[in-house]
Length: 288
Ligand SMILES: [Zn+2]
Image 1 (tube, rainbow, N blue to C red):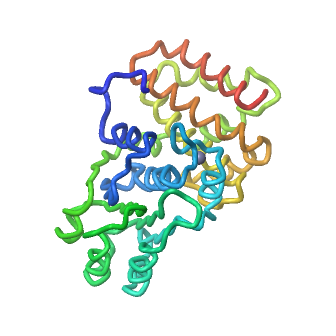
Image 2 (image 1 turned 90 degrees about the horizontal axis):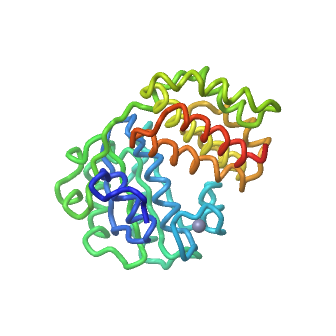
């Protein structure tokens, strides 16, 4: 259970709860601007849908999570139309439609992630509609779009639409600072990290931005460590050394520590105390 009251939860948190409890709908559309984190969330949801854990999903440790993080899970299909509008040929969508009726190989669900679905032409959308109308029990569709309004109303009406705000937080982080921050987590000298967080104490916006970007970098490092290649942070050079220095288990703990600090910051925790606690938690998680 979350330590924070329900009223504090936005759509993202509500979805996170559904995800943890394994109650994802058959079709989801995550809509929001480029900086809303919808792609990262879509992939996280996909991992949750193939997680084999009895507890919170995604656990990050089971065989399903490990394969999903490595981008090699046989029950997750991703079409990425964010950069390429030609990512959705009708044939590919028809293939998805027929695959949807095959039982998953090893996960509880078969997941289809269609990124940048606002770029999907009408014909493949219509092809998709057939399976959205009566989705097989074991199937989850996760679509992302800048706006759900760019999809056919018939597609839209068969999915749960989740609107995400563009926080811009991670994008506002100074990449030089976050790169030094990432390096300091595993540095020989503990003081390096404390010194850097000193820069954040007087500026909560900056603190929030650095936390948001650090979470992405840590996730990227875990993905790289597992043999994946996707870097959502755009700071591969910061994630790579972490992936080389730490075990997968240690890397998986880092985003959680950042999340905890982020929540405390939103709840007006004392920034200086928070920074000190965060340093200790990150160093501990990193085994330093
Ligand atoms: Zn798992």
